[in-house]
Length: 160
Image (tube, rainbow, N blue to C red):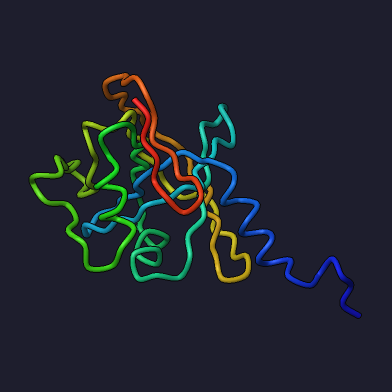
């Protein structure tokens, strides 16, 4: 039996999280392939680990199948980049965007607040999404910028 609480739960759930601002990252892997994520969270300090979730897009599948990946934490000045990696067919990994490549092929963004080089530990399917838990093997800190970039109410919002 479906209760009143269950009716519209999915829509209310999405609305609740639209009201909750989150940080923005680009997850990248060799290929190159990448996607914008607003679900990055720290999991553990010892061992250093983080998590994020992805849906079933071709980029998401490539990221979840990669042996290594980079979580590029975005800041002020990265709104266009966040948009580019959130839309299919948008420009990605162009010289103008400032990408560099590790010897192992993963792209990283030197202008990001931080780049976390990771290896996946666990892939947990949940509904139509996959939660990725990854061990952080190296952290490259970029310039500390004043301000932030968040995803809020289905928009990228930049404050400097």
